[in-house]
Image 1: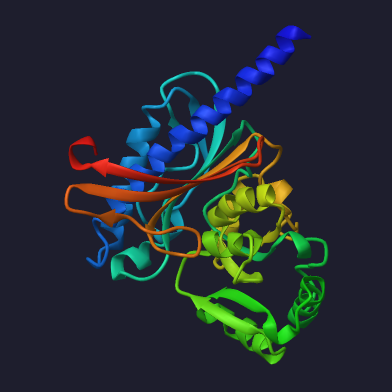
Image 2 (image 1 turned 90 degrees about the vertical axis):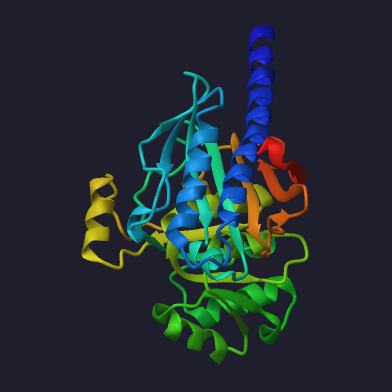
Length: 328
């Protein structure tokens, strides 16, 4: 019993140490991407973030496998699914990554961009191709009343009721895409507010689970990688995300089937997307958004703002780091 107890404490410490090591990884990716803000080249920004993230991950004492990542659907640079990172055999961990969430925002100097890593025990994170999912995300108070198959009006009314709000006080975040025009009309027809974002539904999905949120719900179709990334933080924070694969092209459907997923009607909860408690969500802001401030370039230092959420302890840490130029 004593040996088991010691091993559990060792695992907790190892998890905690790696969580803080991942901050250095997302910081490096965010700084590399931030150098491309407003330069109009999203692939260069993404490539810089990917190279920085890969390099730093390969300096860590663990064995990580990328089980879901960004890149392929956009023909962008990527840490590819199945890629092994780290310089040790143990601990073995699953990783979901987005070295640069919101490449267009960085290219055009818009609002909201992050570098993100989610880590979990082996087989804890959904293994899936880089494609699209239908999503519905809410905070802790509304987690038991949502239904991804229910009409928009019904979901909004139920969420409003449990939050103690009038429907016209509800704010729903939606990606500004042509595929969402009907959804946007349906939301507005209820009297609720719509807040449109050009990119970035990781932060958007997590936002309703934050204390005193300005956003009550996220709805719409977005990338599957972002669903897993957001689900980890949402689950630890006590909220809920429901997601279902929504291939927009026949090639996407084929990739999903090749990954061994045959039931495209399955509705995934946050627990399905990120199992257990040995989970960490780590993000560093590139451009200011609803979660974090962006990278700040000073005269002799670069300032980064990061967030670490750990499943085992339930802790939320905000980390501000000052990087001297010679140390980057």
